[in-house]
Image 1 (cartoon, rainbow, N blue to C red):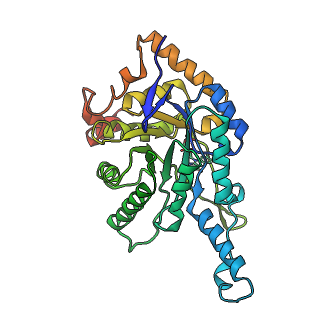
Image 2 (cartoon, protein in one colour):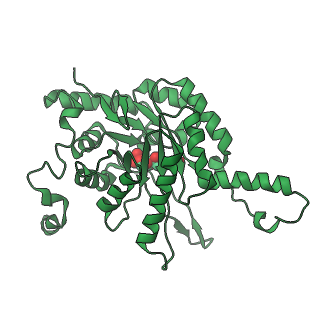
Image 3 (cartoon, rainbow, N blue to C red):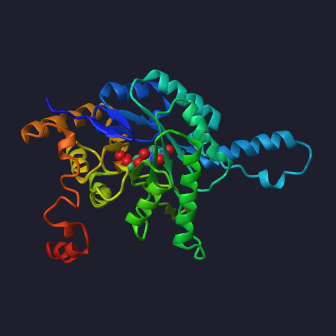
Length: 329
Ligand SMILES: Cc1cc2nc3c(=O)[nH]c(=O)nc-3n(C[C@H](O)[C@H](O)[C@H](O)COP(=O)(O)O)c2cc1C
């Protein structure tokens, strides 16, 4: 029998298949179904900085009602659809999920500024989470803001969250950094125990009839795996943090590639949304049968075996491969 176990953020996991942050976790039953289908941990959907600030603005508005002192700023409180639930509800829901499953439950905070809202990291810890993801999702449209300034503010945020909790902390990153390995190392110095590569930025579309910018969520496919795969392979062995791959994992082979690049776990959403939670069991069976066929005894044995430091041609991950790729067409 092959050994699928892995360790991530200090957690001993029975396999590297984790259900990533998504609305799937809005129902306790879905978390239980994911556990029954074999995933080794679940990540809660995110609690957003905006939700927490919104809630405190609402509270403030209630306290100030009739005083006229606060009206202007509060005329517009955005509606976040199904992500509109308040932070206290989020924390209670996390406790319920934690009670309903035996596998680790990872909380998720999503924000970009330091401020009072990060105290919710402590509440997530108190609610019983086994670790915390911090999703840095920000798209700068300001030509005056330099990358160093932005990175410095992220590092401060990570450090501020780190100070709030004892839980293992993983940072979910976007791929858009000029020197990702350097920023990754500084995130670890700021207190990150793990890095999750990568956040997907959802690209807005134009509705030409209404002349409106509209949200357009497209689920991933296996082609998207290559971006995080390359970066995990580059970072493995260079950064003292556990690496998680998210984006484009749809099959057992995708998981195996991530392990060989150097990931501790893969975290999956699109495949479960598209083809059902039962895919978890199938993916795990695919992994097992591939490993048996290729005479691997454990996931640990293959971890990082195709990282940049391990392969015969390290330049395959860098520019040197560029001309070769073009001429292969
Ligand atoms: C509908 C939907 C909701 C999501 N919500 C969150 C979220 O709240 N927080 C977060 O960090 N990622 C969120 N994600 C991103 C996923 O966790 C995951 O990282 C991403 O979809 C890439 O993985 P995939 O290719 O398996 O879908 C969401 C993705 C989808 C499709």
